[in-house]
Length: 309
Image (cartoon, rainbow, N blue to C red; front, side):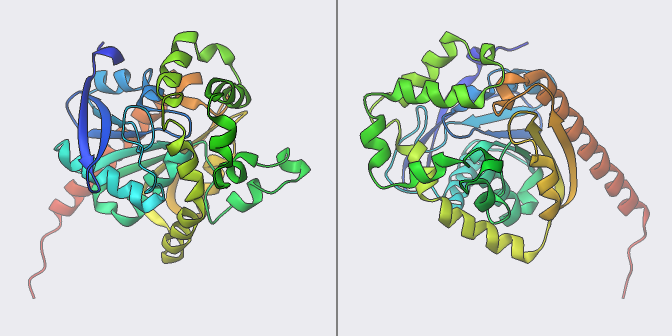
């Protein structure tokens, strides 16, 4: 099986010249893997090779502000990131609807891509993340039931403060947050930490990290607008870690008609790194079932004679 280190590294230039670095390999239907906060394309190192071995083409970008991609000061709201992803896919010559997989804050542009461009998306996988405009306000409220709430939303939203406090202590900040999000610390090795910190601790490395949160209220408005139109009709898979955002699957029923998924046992928030085998099998089963349904629908449609009026 092809290893992740053997994937091709490439660049796409999007939204006025912002460089996005991405990794890609394989042939077949395209799977777009969108990482989340404090991650990069490296987040998918255990999952992507197995998808390629199963007959899929993988495209895994470093999102703007992250990894080896450019780190501009603006453009971190959901729809700006959707524009990045669509232009990236066009430059990779992706054909046919793509399977879009988003984890953590990367699930937000993944959802908006599916909502705004459903004919371009074969399926949506939403991994371990609340839903803006549905329950994010509840989860960020300071109260006992949420263990003080998702304080990092307010922290990263504050103007200039995160940069002042994190710059020069990127390693300590990154280690602290990963320690909170992991159920199984052994899932992240010293080599993994070094790869993440190679770019996070570089000049401008925190820009994407804070950018997503500073534009989070705009992204929430964008969610509210598409949710008001009605539920997604394409296939949706929702998975959350037992010790992460365990309600991920249940919440999606409010915004999508066809939802499957559940809770990944003995797993925290970092589902692609803590439970890669479980996640990979769930994705392959989900993709396969969708392909079978599409083929059945096509066959059924072909069997019905056309009406002439």
